[in-house]
Image 1 (cartoon, rainbow, N blue to C red):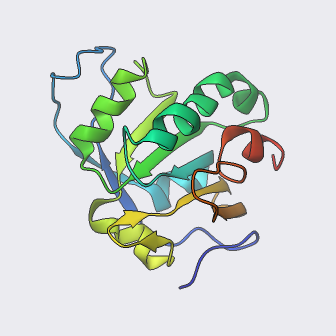
Image 2: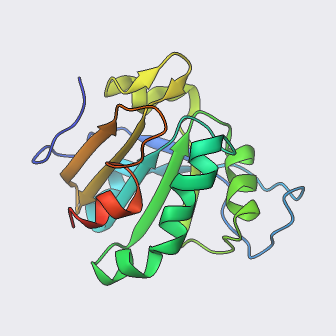
Length: 166
């Protein structure tokens, strides 16, 4: 498979790992990693899936995740049930990244695309990292899928770009 496009069904057999939020913001408190069956869950929700090259990296932290934090209410108003960030980092690093950004609940979930399994499957990787991309899935159907090809740009995958497509 090479990429996803509007009109595609979200692929089957896609799962990520994450640590469920507990309301605790202590980044040294680790939880157990659990599987999230994205293929199953996305059939019943409107989801924005955002991939970043790495947690805590400059553009990802300074621009990308903050755009979603700033526009979370706008996304919810457009019917988005869930925002999920994925990266090649393990689920503990992703959980710490969410906590470091003050996310105490499941408003934004931070998950691991372990081994880049999903991103490789759709061909959106660069070396050992994901490309920067966003996919809107509305009840199992892809309605938007774009990669930011300019280094440091979040034009297509940031909250503002996604909101324009909702």
